[in-house]
Length: 171
Image 1 (cartoon, helix red, strand yellow):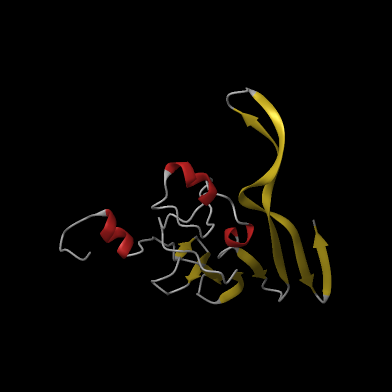
Image 2 (cartoon, one colour):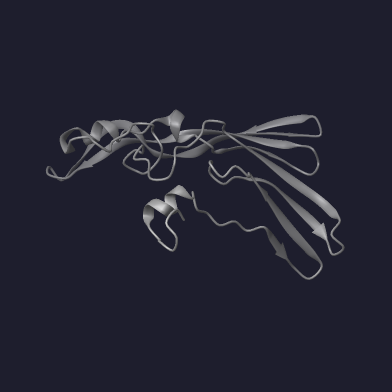
């Protein structure tokens, strides 16, 4: 930390602190996890390898992510559900806050898993969409009323898989 022996929120955030699992060892096999090594970015699992009891690689999986980068932790650029929307609300009047906390489907996809490549060479690609709603419960009328909008978070819209030269799509 920047001040010797001092533990503070600021020092913790400056370190972009995270923990990672590097390896799991079982009786006759182990699994190794390989991560991004850029200390200025979020931790990403890039691949995992399965090894036999002598350390030889049995097979491995690799992962790719959306290239849009997330901001630093606690950047105050999130919608009301806590998902990234790239709208800074730190110095906003309370009356205007709701306009800065609206979901943004493009920014929600920052650094989300987009592809897994399997040991066979095949792969799956993931297409996401925002959660949507068609009704809201109003607090003071105590009624459910029609209203269409996007909610925070993503769900998988479709999975495109290619294996042995054959492509398939699941929705």
